[in-house]
Image 1: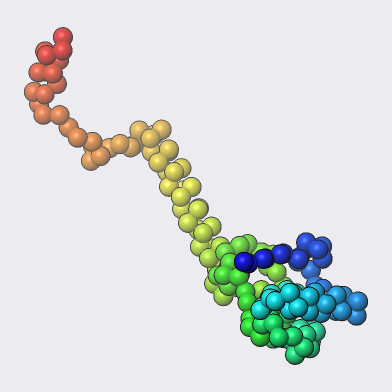
Image 2 (image 1 turned 90 degrees about the horizontal axis):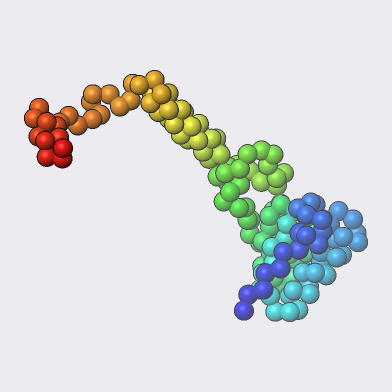
Length: 149
């Protein structure tokens, strides 16, 4: 059974936690509670690096750091951040290694431009042109009309 409980809502969102002694103790106690419950790992988000270093030394849990600096056992960053899928502003603890958002914007602009060009050509009568249509054989329309009239 997997229990995943997002605690960022408990702390008011994705903001730094553990910057006071009381908060640091609370983070530590929460991790120890998970450890006592049988968890094997914990994701620790946006805490001071030095705090996570000390907590990692004092727990058997595998600590996954996202915004906790090098203090965790492993580094974690969402693919969305790594690839730059979203526009700024970026979370302080993230790094964009690529600019996929910019590529997506360029593709979107190309799509919109293509549709605008199509509409302009249709409204201006330049599409379809002779090269885009099939022409009837010389006698086809006359014979067709004879058959239906």
